[in-house]
Length: 189
Ligand code: SIN
Image (tube, rainbow, N blue to C red; front, side):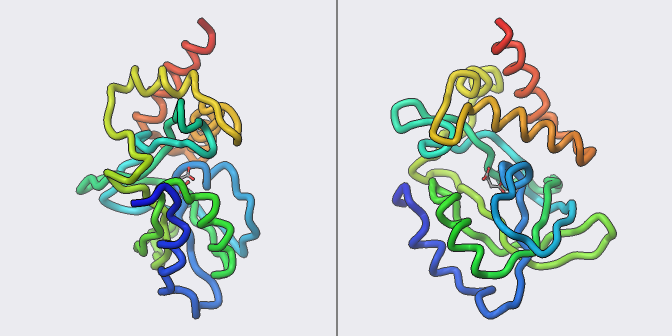
């Protein structure tokens, strides 16, 4: 897969004729909503876990020193909590650009806190994409995050902002919480 997924994502036309579409965010889309939305609600999707296994060459790292950002990995029975945004289909041109470093649009069911649900879109960077870094020990991941930086800022800010936003949503994510703790220690030392 090429490092730029915008052309592939443009072929995903499934929701183009809809007046609005739900977008599920689990990473930077939770704490940085740089797009207009009609409504937003805490939401969750099933059978996925959030992991810092995706490389970032364009936002939180560089080609020479990639950062690590969140993606979702299949995990039967797991629930990933995040934020859902109701957007118009036109917003996907901007979102495809923002998520171009390996993320593909995937149609997914999502559930809202009130028990209702909807079908919508999530951006997932799947295993083996050109920017994929994959599994490593949490301590190695924390070390990489503590030192990386890219055009959108420090990799540690991405992680710490996400940890803060999840706390505000009352979400406990042990992977994110452990990484945030380690990165804080590394930044202090
Ligand atoms: C997301 O937030 O849903 C996708 C990954 C990211 O942009 O951090």
